[in-house]
Length: 487
Image (cartoon, rainbow, N blue to C red):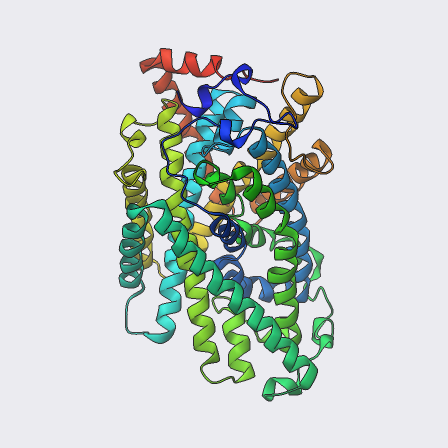
């Protein structure tokens, strides 16, 4: 029996009335992710290449006001994650948002969300490979970007085939490097501001946040246009939901991981950017260059820029590693639902969805081709598509949460032990915000292409759904009956 085939009447409930994690359906995975690994996966998910590399272009567009954009988007991300957390403690499964879309919106939405999340991580993997190649180019400019991207792709592929414990351990240390380095950057930056050491100390000042044409140097409109890149930086925070089926104690680890999100955003995004922009005036940053690398070069710490470059390289590899992990699991969820080839259901001897990971890696290889054909534009192309796919995933989480709360209020479903503060109201606010960001994407000529790609993707999935129903009507009929759609 697959997780999505469990009817609500079959769910047990804990003391609080929510289904206990121990009663979640057996999916065949090894519960090999411990508390420290889930915590670090959650922390690492909020620190990615969108901050380390993408922030450079956004600073050039918005100046110091980028700090406010990250804070605003961070609040919305917290609403999304608390909505997901409530659903996860109601029914913790690896399929996560695809399963909830299927339950509350119908089988087509589960199918569409699962495949779109797979697409998001495939193109995110391309972006991370591109970023990693750019970082290596800092040390070895003679090595072509596509060669570096290919080497990293093969190495991470091998890691994901071994076991979930190896993935979790590698992700733990990747995240540890990012967290330690960011804290170190903040401390050093504060030292420059306070004691004025190094050449950067002569110009470092809080006044850098408003002296050069103000806090909104290019206008509020230009600042809002950076929200697409800002939202890309937050992609992967929902990855903690995919780990539900392989966490040792999801009822304890998942709420703790989600509740630490606000301070992670405040420290690693708002705090780090504030310090960096105080130390170095925003006009000195340029697109395509990590602001952290540029800041440490300005401070003049021996090998500092190289160390930061290594850190941001691990951030890119961490995200790509997570992408391989999540795509394989999502393909298996789709196969369990009869919405992907049955071969994706098979687990290897180490209880990993090896075939799904392999197919996903082959598609990520398109990123290697892009680095060969258009190395200067590869990052921009794939990040815009990944952002659009991520927005769809977040919208499905929020809409599922609204419908779940409606069902709980009507007495049709048990309450979760981890209710979102503000209930459905915060989810509606987040939905409105994501729709606003989508309008900004449509307005921007450079990013608008991703909506064309998504329209083509939607058409392809629509055709696939019709073919699926025609070839296997008994599968789609079963999906429509169990679990029952909640309206």
